[in-house]
Image (cartoon, rainbow over all chains, first blue to last red; front, side, top):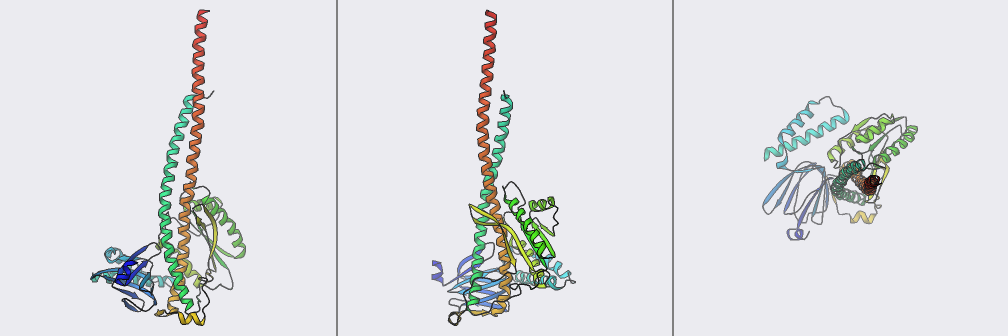
Length: 136
Length: 294
């Protein structure tokens, strides 16, 4: 945390399985449900709902990209806490696996109710992941 | 008198078993440490979720969600039992199975529709032995349960509950209090009741709350409630995993100690038997010599 004071902003990514990231940063961009949110030092205290998409973390002119899988973000006192199901560096995403999952989900057109919601969620997740890979 | 050779053979086999139990103890210790770390990581997540909920409550938002509400008519219930895939861990599986069987009788009286889901080979075979029918069974959970796997199970329950197909969900698992104490526990996960013991929102706290909610507090709440359920369920799995390793550690430790004790006793008997055999042989020789002289 002492480093956080120097740079000003600290980002902490927590998943139920581990603390995936805890680093000082200059800038964070997060995928909220209704669009991207960019965060600099001294941001107003905010609680936001995350969508599926890309989180960009910039520190000393180096940008790391992560996929975050929904969840929340809490910003307070220059600490950005990201609570998500899982977070993966973009390099760890596997295009073949994602495409396979996407195709499988898209083929289930007869799903109703809860199953349809789940299907839509998988499609959204996969598409967000593929978009990130295409950009890389 | 016991045969010294047979005694020695037995002693050797006990030594071999001791080696196995000792190794199992060490493995359990290593796994326990890993499982414990994961449980600690999950606590970090839970704490933050709780913080978000508390902040929501502080902002004066009324916390209401279909998952928090009790169904007026409780017709169908489900029981999820968390057991281990492997045995040799003392009373760990037995306690959970016994408790679940008792609860099953109670729930069957309360609700006409009752289903039972079980994780772990030991539980599945335990209930099969008791002729209890199971709905779903899972085998994929070991010492490091994955959140994604738990989430899948949780999603099914959530959807059933919201659709009104399920009115109550109980989980039987081994709760971890401390390294020295783990107990088989029943927890009612659905309906969830209150999320946290959040302080009542007062005008003052509302004014103090600085948070901006994006896109809206309601939207966040919609996501927070199912997430807390999933995390609660995940915590049950983690507790079970940690407790299993501790139970195995303790069981294997006492097995090793027992083996030591047995080896000690057998060695004593073996030495005595050997000595008396030698004495017997000497007596025979002396007797033979005396017979010749006489």
